[in-house]
Length: 328
Image (cartoon, rainbow, N blue to C red; front, top):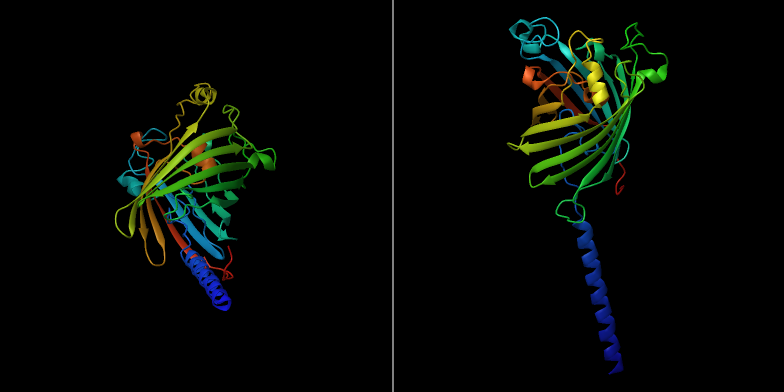
């Protein structure tokens, strides 16, 4: 009798352990996957929380062309747009060629070269090199209420290699004068098929014009992605820079400018087209510049004045090395 009870007890233990093992295996196989909130690491002007991925490199080329509509707000009539300039396609205000390399599943190294806009002389800084990184602190997990948001931190340092000029815009005295930095938190969430995010941003500049007086500027940005079809999405992003009243007044002072300089909030609207090999963005934006440290403090073109432009981004991801299995 005792032997039978002992056998039953051992059998129950084996069954319990077997069930626990099955549950653990099921849990491992049903691990929640990170939600793909955005397809690319950029919306239009705004960064996204998405990393490239360990061992991958994203190669990206971005163009901003000139104004679509002819206007005389800055420069002679028709200087920036209209049929004469093929609705802005004859000129490029800025071009950026960039690489994002996935050092880990969450950390990207960013290297880029940008032309820089010369749309307005008082804001012109060109020949720009960018070095930065993006780190994903939190991931939104699919169907997991305990991980409802994605959070990333973006940093970039930009340096201009243009010649020092006599004008107040480019009167660099040292290397620090040539630099600007962007610090940005990116908070994103996918709700159903729609993706939304916020981009609180801080921009610092080593050098500003003598009449500017604002070397540090905070801006609050946001973006939304709405799918239209399986391979086409609508994108919108927007930034509101918080410029001081002193800085605004100085750019409107007739002692400095014959025509007041009025700043605008950056707004981009575009279409994202996904193909097996590439991701294309067809953009419309009032930003002449592409880099954050340029378009956030110095967007002087306005949608209301017809100063918006075509732009496009072509993105292609390559594998640099094969990640080891079971690496987190």
